[in-house]
Image 1: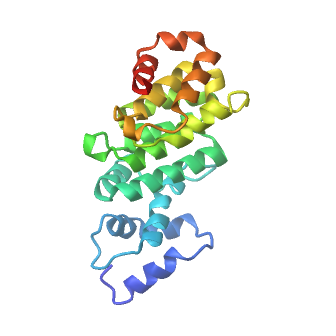
Image 2 (image 1 turned 45 degrees about the vertical axis):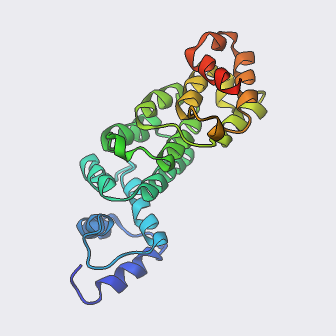
Length: 231
């Protein structure tokens, strides 16, 4: 990192899209972590930081004959040093990995449980939205995904995408609420604030859809809380 050409080299590497062999990344592992944590004497732009942040996911995913580059402890150390925006973007990358490769039990869940910082100050709108995206992409693992992320999320303003999908896609076989309405109710309540001004659009429709899918939803405290917000 102290080499006169280090900054130019890392800027160039951020825009290189050619696959690099594992030994190459092993050599650059320590300086990459240092750059992400802001320990270099220069800074990356937003797009470059997002690229190197995404490598915390892609280079940690287990594959045939490929050992993960980063330990969960190293990832957690980096996650505590970066900002909320980049943490949120890393979660979107994790969601993309889940969508492309699956591996909920083998990789995604262990990554969250062992790497993600659990202190309150690391819960943000950005990370909550990223966690919700992961849960929605977990398929049959949706109940376990919600259980995993609930301790890591907070109410966010205008969580419209979840309510829209629940209310409009109730007949879609891929709709998470179709097979797990009570779990979807818990997730919806967890991200919906008490402030009526910040309620998500289509909240009423989402509640009706969940109650239609499983009438027992109406007996849940989460359902009653959200119904009260609408009155």
